[in-house]
Length: 117
Image 1: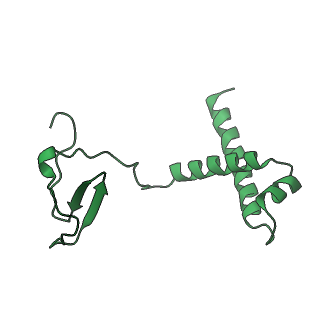
Image 2 (image 1 turned 120 degrees about the horizontal axis):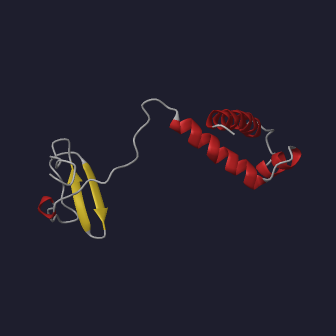
Image 3 (image 1 turned 30 degrees about the vertical axis):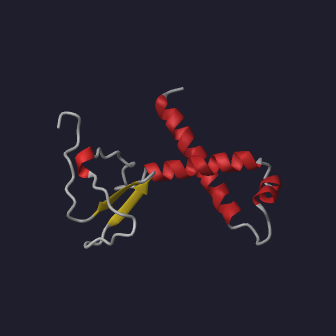
């Protein structure tokens, strides 16, 4: 089978699954997903597999979708020790993990990205 045929079949399958998902999500009040699936001849596992695939395909096709999170390297000298109850003079984001806290503000400088920097 050619790759164009395979892609067309995949798109057709995703459209069919999207219709099923819309139908399930607008099922009568009080009807569970399991009951809806039984009425439509699919298993609960198949429904959730299809839901996951349709969501993934949808998210891939959103223009300007956010990029996956990136790891930002932090140099040890950037971190400063603060007491837990200290108040910051600038509003910002406080991140605390395993006893290490980082306070990030709009003026916090960012190191250049990449290994060669």
